[in-house]
Length: 144
Image 1 (spheres, rainbow, N blue to C red):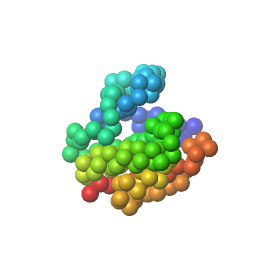
Image 2 (image 1 turned 180 degrees about the horizontal axis):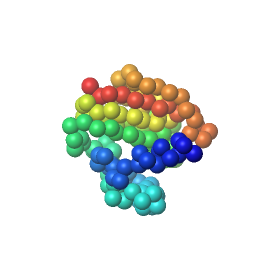
Image 3 (image 1 turned 90 degrees about the horizontal axis):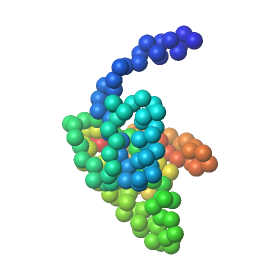
């Protein structure tokens, strides 16, 4: 109870920095908007439609946190070799976008090792977790 009181006393009236949430998939965007509203955070989180690979830094520094697709939704119905090439290209695009964010902290929840390989930077943190039945990695970098 004491810890709950302490946590409640630390609640800020507004987010201390801009928060931008972005997705390209319409169903994911609709769910995101519903969740932001339900949490009472509509004034703190700007929801945008767009491809993550096109993201450019708006501020000199910040944190970029993402749970990029693991490949299932992107690759539905494609043959294995086509899937591998397509996800590798997608992850190269994500890596290029992340490298444009020099000085930023990047945290990814990745269910596909090809994503970390595409970035070609050694993570400061590499922690194994489970997202339901899937093994994932929590990865953190400071982009040079």
